[in-house]
Image (cartoon, rainbow, N blue to C red):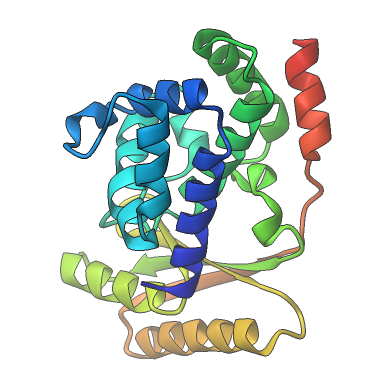
Length: 240
């Protein structure tokens, strides 16, 4: 498991454990997690089970199950792709952590009330932006981003899978666009050797594929964006 994947899985786990027992049970039940055999009906038992789970289990079981549930929501397109063959789920997990933190802040609201206000807030934050980066928590708060738009010159599904796997090895966040096109995003902090090393490796992989005339690439950079603080988000929920 990649370091960043493990880190994000831990954040999901911590955000769930920070919820009161009643909200925790309500959220898990909302994700239809009762289908998993280890679930106990008591909040304290569920909490104990989650505490014992390793990041790999959180990622492949809890996050995957949340992904199935959130894909049915009206704001799914703004939440990011959950883990799967087409995505490492990084953006989804970041937004899931933000969602759970806000759910804790709005614990006095019913699920229906919170969902309605969350969607309204999400639309307001998103504005005209096409990405979901405004909802990212502190993990990427000061990070810059390099985006690569990758177009395959041949309709070859194996090429798509091979390149996707290669980019994920270096923490590239891969998401599908239109047919034969994908987007890869790499976050980095200026001056951090390991981040810049990963970015250089992604560029090396893409340049190799481009030189072999299998893809074309468009690249652009993005500076850290201003985001609403958790305090301001909480205020929005209360005002609504």
